Image (cartoon, rainbow, N blue to C red; front, top):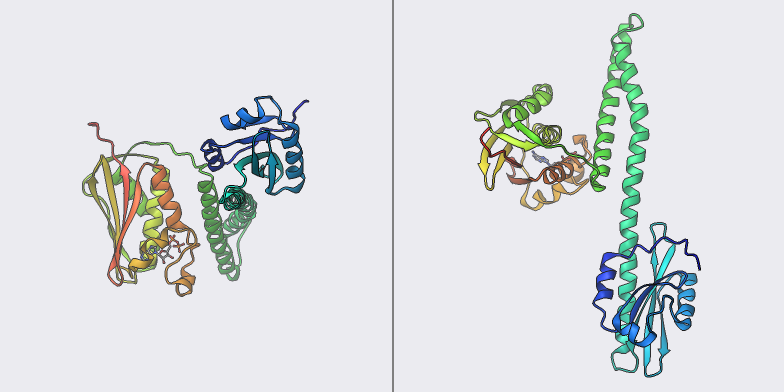
Length: 365
Ligand code: ADP
């Protein structure tokens, strides 16, 4: 029989469970062709390319039902309890069926079978959750793309009008257009962040590492937040490195991390406070860039949680902070992708220190 089904994508945990199975166990595609069998299975049922007729009947039943089933089964020498279970593809369509046989009549057989059925169900649920996650990321990505296009038009045309490219702009409208442009930029930033998060979920972010001066990275990041610091009355004069080191990193991504941390530091530091960056070499062959602030700080309980996507400390209290609660989650993932990490120490009321660890270029340059 010609088989036009793709081979079943078998979840890794299920493979491990099956490989560890001492008794008879098998997996087959929907035409009944055996994809996998244990030695005990071969001893009883032989090693034909197709399942024996009795198991084929069970396979068809599971294929139509779409869920795991238990049933007694007798072979020449023995009575068994069998669990048959479906394997789904990404669309939730059954693409293969498996079975595990356990000796019947042993006092614990039914317990074991119940457990095996529960395990099969668990594996199924795990796959469904993973699939839902994949779909969520894909949706986020498509939506973000769709939203960025009109937002680019909003920002681009309001900028063009502000620059009076088609003639003078009535003064009364200048303020309106500035609002439109700023709101468009803000929405664009948030959408871009969501897009980054979706890409990180899929680990689609490409990084290109090369040696770069840490001092230069810090200077560039400072330039990007300087205006905001002035507006918010926070001193960023200590965002600078005295001693230079070469780091081996993706400059774009490393700068993105530093800018995220600096923007947070400025955002959560009251007027009159200060933000700075210190550097220290750390083991093995790394450079730690410590973004510190004299701001409101973060309680111990919240220090790990703020790295979770969408988490914002203080809940609704800070709802007006303007972010999506993704900046740190993205920054930490990026740092890890670059072979480093981010650590935090903080004391409420005194300030925070976010340490970005990046691989250092150690050969003399
Ligand atoms: P966002 O800034 O968009 O809310 P982040 O992931 O960047 O998202 O930060 C998550 C939360 O961590 C913030 O909402 C804030 O409560 C807390 N946080 C981050 N940086 C600081 C900081 N330097 N000082 C105090 N709290 C901070």
